[in-house]
Length: 66
Image (cartoon, rainbow, N blue to C red; front, side, top):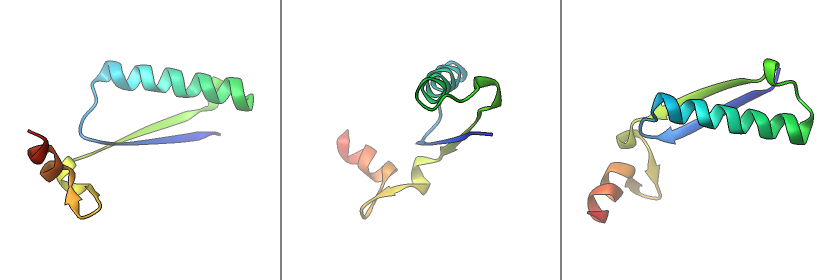
């Protein structure tokens, strides 16, 4: 049972999740020979205020970029 865990800062749309799952599973099947029907993908959409790069929360980096 292959398992893929995708963590992103902020939300994804349903279509984005479907596309990512399709492409990641296709890559795992092609490269590692895994059966797509047995691959589990979990999406963790982390609020940007709970994720930091270096000393800055992503929300602070977002505000600085504006």
